[in-house]
Amino acid sequence: MTASISASAREVSHSRIRELAEIAIGMEGVLRLYFGESSLPTPDFIKEAAVRALRDGYTYYTSNAGLLSTRQALARYYARVHEVDLDPEREIVVTTSGVQALNVAIRCVLDPDDEAIVLTPAWPNGSSIVQMANARPVQVAHPLCGPRYGIDFDALEAAVTPRTRMLLYTSPSNPTGWVATVEEQTRLLELARRHGLWLLADEVYERLYYGGRRLGGVVPSILKLAAREDPVIVVQSFSKSYCMTGWRVGWIAARKDLAARATQLNEFIISHAPSFAQRAAETALQDGEEAVAGMLSRYIDNRDFCLQALRAMPGLEVPEASGAFYLFPKVHGLKDSFEFCRRLLLETKVGLAPGVAFGEGGEGSVRICYAAERRILEPAMQKLGEFLQKWAG
Ligand SMILES: Cc1ncc(COP(=O)(O)O)c(C=O)c1O
Image (cartoon, rainbow, N blue to C red; front, side):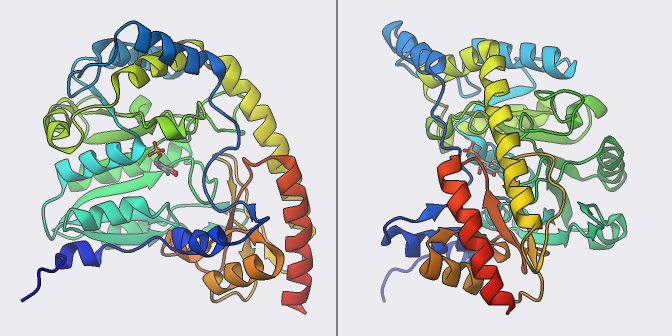
């Protein structure tokens, strides 16, 4: 007998974005637009805060919920930005990234064989983490209603079974750039209340919003609509808002019982986020508005440049995208987006993420991350256009 990997681990789907990236790794000169990461570095004032924190002795363990000062900074951020009052000691848990926030939140609400409804196309990690909890993701696709993605509430109702425990949505969305309206959020909350489900909102792209009255406004958080005793969990991260992907700091804002349990489980998963990174994250929250504004003006220019280029290409339908840093054009007649992206990569060195990687409703589209530099985006759009001419013809 040989020792084997568990069936439950083997069942976890592999990432098709990573599969594409693995092909690209061996190639030179690839215009990489397949990962969800900005080319901008972390702003200097945040790096300096981390250095100061190290000098000040933030090199020890912290509480499993994170430093109280970080949670207090988060509570102040919610009061200032969303006019939402949160209790930093009971309703906020600092995590070691958005991925870990998702992980511990999902672990707190799902038992083996439970079901979690996931609105897709979506970043695949949510569904994979559900599988890692030995539960079952049930995908319900966002329909494309004219130029905008929407929510099929009838399909959602039909997907609820006695085993359903949770509903996960992402707004602003990776990969579509869709942003839930207040009305959509209200209906999601109402559905969750009525069926006794946890509503898990992934809001990691909340600062990347171009639809507000002014650039720099935030997407309305579900926390603003929900009462504190509602079964709502918000997953958040410093990665996208402050260009801190490598730092691995995020947070959860949730009902007290969930926050307490997540704090306890953190001990056995990761214990807590690095102490000096938590201190730097506080500085990002306190002094980060100017950096966010600079980042947004760059992204909106990039988005508009790509939108204009894509809308002139043959055989593409380009939905509205008012948040995050992605466009998700649909390629007419496309049945195998992985093969499309593989050929595009090998023939033109343009690396896009295949829509199939994002689950139900994603096949037939490709994801473009426009948080890259213009010197990458411009030739990438040119080459994609030429490739599509050949593809369509
Ligand atoms: C929708 C979504 N949620 C969460 C994350 C996690 O971000 P991080 O783990 O870097 O905090 C990402 C990263 O790409 C994402 O796209």
